[in-house]
Length: 344
Image (cartoon, rainbow, N blue to C red):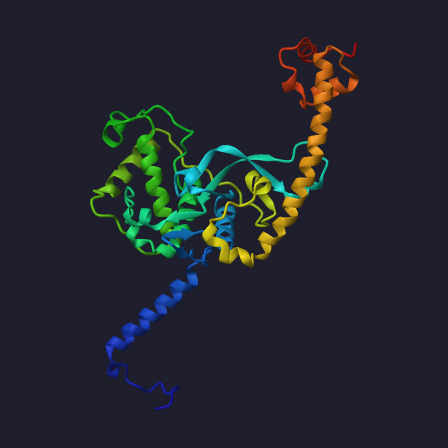
């Protein structure tokens, strides 16, 4: 029968074939609507460790810049004591590597950073227990991706820990969260970040709950209801950042480089172009550091003059700019500048 022949009786077609075709068409449609994943690289497993490679870090960092308006910093797990974290305290970030070649006095900006360890022990993942998610459902070769999305979730899908108001709902906290010290909000945020990571990694699939987790879903729903009734708010995602790897660079990456795991050496022998470009950043940083050290030395000379009660016009200019004010605290000259008196 010709493929274009439409005279076939639909009743003669096996219903299983029709059902299979419908399922295939539905799957094709679902795939068409599913956004392209931002993270496609997988972390290698070497000697029992999940290894963060430059290419994988670049994808995780792009995801953070795109979804959360933040950047990732690579850390050492023995110093971090965790797989990853969202640092709510501001850290220094270089908005543009070109600023290292400028004469601007202040080239860094403050920003809360996301951090990820350069290597993660697989045994911790295999034996780890989260409040809700079953970690056994995360493939070992996707551990870094999970950690990356989890930290992004903290920056986009959490209750703001800085905005805490007294509970106004009668008995609300007594029902949902016995303590008011933020411990329950922290637990809730961890669950929400896990859910965010799972949805990004496996969109449309139900997240498996670990055995013994209890009735987490009801607790989450009730706690969110109480928090919202008490005026608690979700974090406000920042605007996406430029994806250029030479912009918005954490200070430690500029001044110290990346603390890659020793097990990442195969990938470092032929580094990707974005990492090769960092060689210029480090050269410029060395020149910038020497230049700023000389300027600082000149500032120190003026500070010593001020301490000797022999300030010059240059000394007063530097003090007003804030460049040596910290060196003059408590001196008569400091009080003079504070009062705004002119040159003697």
